[in-house]
Picture 1: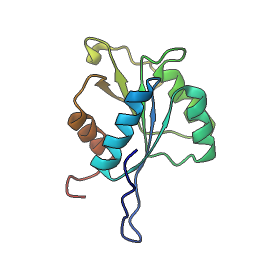
Picture 2: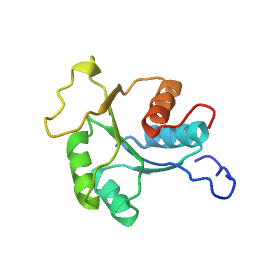
Picture 3: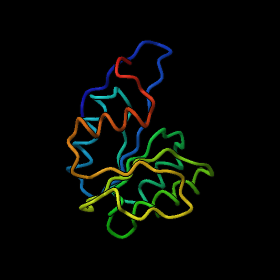
Picture 4: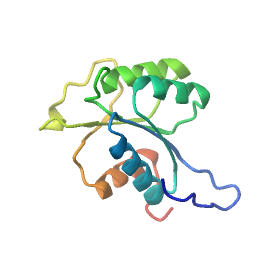
Length: 138
């Protein structure tokens, strides 16, 4: 993982949790997000690790979830994390579906950001920046 960036006193770092079964992708995502957004990133390889992390520290500002995760899809992971903290969470789903805009979103979910898993890293960082409400000059 990349070196920690020291911020001035009083500046709050955004906290992002990345959940995906592919260790190499998680590691790369964490490095890119930390460097590109100056945020704190933690990763989990499955829903159970994500739930443990969320129970231990429930103040994630953005979840990035693979909708196509093996064993438990991203919607199920989101529901369990939401239940674990007793509140809503901002989420960005990634999917490998050929036309990611047509993926069926379950009715009980708020509007979600659904992005292609294959999107280039600068686009992923820009999408996360938008979800977090970070201006480019921040």
